[in-house]
Image 1 (cartoon, helix red, strand yellow):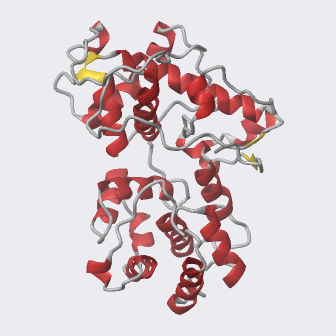
Image 2: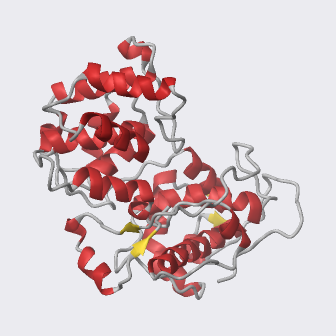
Length: 354
């Protein structure tokens, strides 16, 4: 699948030429709008080529070949896959809501596989029953003192010093988790009816803003604690907002969540209209969280493919180059999605999902 790639540098401009599509009216799109759909399909095609065990190159598109982009489906990314299989659905760890919630939030506060593995090596099985602030702090402090990064660069966790009074960021986050556990947040989440209710519960805690609360409730919803549709609710992050601005010259009165929902609702129609062969996740459509993430990735993609179209952040390059992870992973999705049996039919299904 050919994607647009700029052949010469162009001066970025915020004065875009609108593309009028009747089915989007009154919203008006830019040329990046079509790239959104082509990018989604090609990134998913790369994922499946890796699932099938094909060798590099997995794409002819130089931007996708050179730079790092997340998968079209959030749950397919390496960190999400680790969370689902190795943090949530563990036969050797307690399955009570209290314990599952503790593991999810502990993992997500750092959002780094290596930090979870470090804690397991040092402390053994991760359970709230055996949790000790002193022990966890000692392991994490020692790691930082020896030059290890314990936080992912995927998103920025506020330090929390004002709320919890500790000088070390990780200490404040452990205290935040302790407060959630004391509030029995896990049990309260099992009683709510909507994803937005869960979002608002998380949003009420210090250091957790809109973006983090939405990410956290999405991760919690991978477990059996809740069973919300991922089509219930969406909160655009900073990157997605810039992607939206690049795709739409005029939103036509729609707000950002409404534009994301429009994309989710139109996906089959747009792939067909553009003649794009999109392979879904074994029958699972792109959900709101996926469409939100794709706007973030298309914002990055457009910096190279559409350099003449500026976002408000002023970013003009993609920082991370693509480096394939050496160890493949065995794909596993929340059992309630009923995808895992379908994956087994498509053997080999070991894929480096990053």
